Image 1 (cartoon, rainbow, N blue to C red):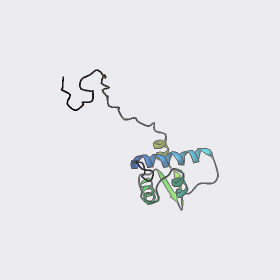
Image 2: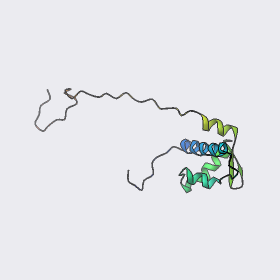
Image 3: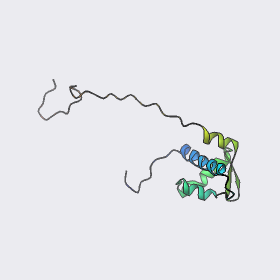
Image 4: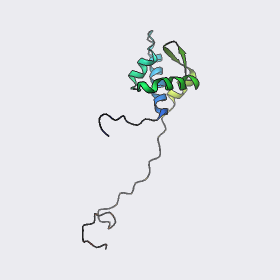
Length: 112
């Protein structure tokens, strides 16, 4: 990956990132509600994905839109506080260095 390439993130992770940040803002009790654009800046959501993300959040009922600001709903809080599920890790076979199948073959060597 080069420095200019973005790391792949699923759309679900972006939804969860925004909801978690909105929940933190709501819990902090600050009177100033940041705009959706500010939340996206904080969570590093690319500008070209913001409109679709906002539409999805409103359509799914996770946030309500009030002008430029958004407020998290009970459904959004439930999703934001949901524990992260880990994917099952595939068992990897770590071969022994003495295993004939794991050693590198040199040119002219025979399989033994």
